[in-house]
Figure 1 (tube, rainbow, N blue to C red):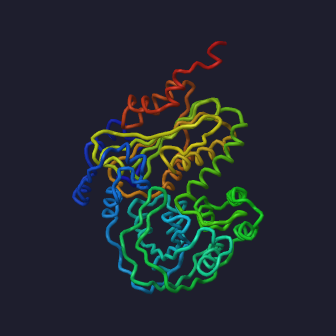
Figure 2 (cartoon, rainbow, N blue to C red):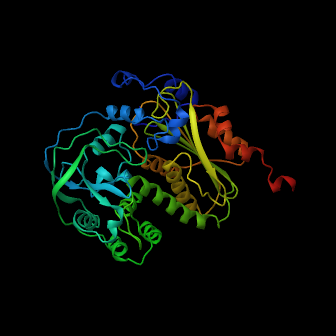
Figure 3 (cartoon, one colour):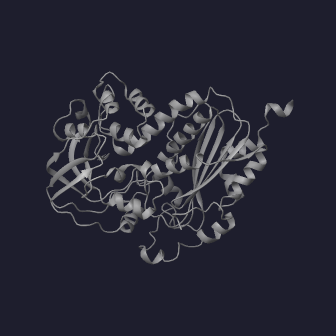
Length: 440
């Protein structure tokens, strides 16, 4: 049911279908529910900080079990890397890093390029990602200033526009559960790397110019690559491997994802905030991978809010019988603190900024997401960004009146109008604040 759209399904039917239980047959395949302290704590933590005080995240353990076993891999393997790599964050400033390689040849770009996953189902994406094997070595993040050995070879392989032939020898057969994180896509087993050989590919001159320019700041490099058409995912990989900037260092993959979304969206919004406001209210509705997205664009100076509503028996709301939400917002001047929902806040803001720049207008933006039961494995923030991008490529429903726009938008949400009106800061502000025009 998650592969298709629910746009034509009334919200009351979505609520009846999704709130009481998992999709038919799903419950039999899942481990028992793990008791946790409360969804509010889990929504803030998202695997990263262990706010519950436990030595390991019980939700993460359950998600790993849901991912299932991987195909066995021997100590020797060959494959074509997309190219792709992962940089860990534990032990910073000394971290583990290494290539991600599938035991497959040919066009493997789709294994690590979310912008090629449009139309794929949840199981297809998981299958691609679980096929990736990670080879690991330890390195200081500052080694990116003068890279040698594997780090240098991996950086130069990332200049390629095509998959790179990789031959890897591990200290032991790769094993262990899949790597799962709320920000980045999952991948399969890992093992320490002993020997390797990376083939050569055809270099992308756009990447070469940024890589070899040691006087170009990282923010300038991101902006340049983005303006020249590189995907957001490609820019994130380059930043993570320490391939841009004047003071280069490795950036853990989780941090690089948010850094790129944040940096690019702020640059776009600087231009958007100088543009005139939209005249009508825009409402978009879109369904993707077990979630419903509703976006409301209202006339006025730029402000932005992102709220997620997690239904019972979803990843971060497994023990409660109620819907729980987490969100954050910013005004015209932006924000300086890290947003409560984490990386999704910035990935959605980037998609929103792209749309407003195309429109040559600014607006007040309220973006809402309902996460329904069934998807118990996080795929990373890319799926939220791509869902919002897809929504904003569709035709909006237009309204003259704010009240009508809000009523229509909230009628599409299964959690109900009362829930969303009480959850949204900007919605309450927009419905109660008197505009200058009302006095004229």
